[in-house]
Image (cartoon, rainbow, N blue to C red; front, side, top):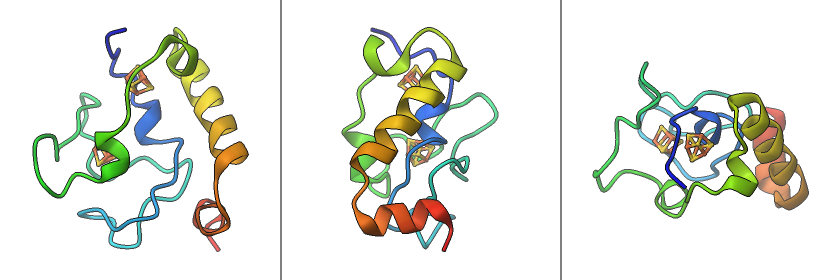
Length: 93
Ligand code: SF4
Ligand code: SF4
């Protein structure tokens, strides 16, 4: 499927590795500092773009048909699969 640029995959997941403008990584549920106003990644094509983001692929199962649906599904995946360090990051503690 084509990405609808809803932005949910740059908000819902936690990213444990440092990202430009987010040196401590990205907590779950927080909008990435590199997501611009058109929901495009400002790091696209740059070496600093996290491996997590490089590996992300849009899919109907995860993205659904609306931003809210994608946010809900990705948040559920985050909670189901996050190892302890990512859960801590997501909890902001
Ligand atoms: S959640 Fe899916 S549709 Fe939305 S921006 Fe990410 S890949 Fe694209
Ligand atoms: S680095 Fe880019 S692709 Fe990754 S979460 Fe941030 S805005 Fe999204």
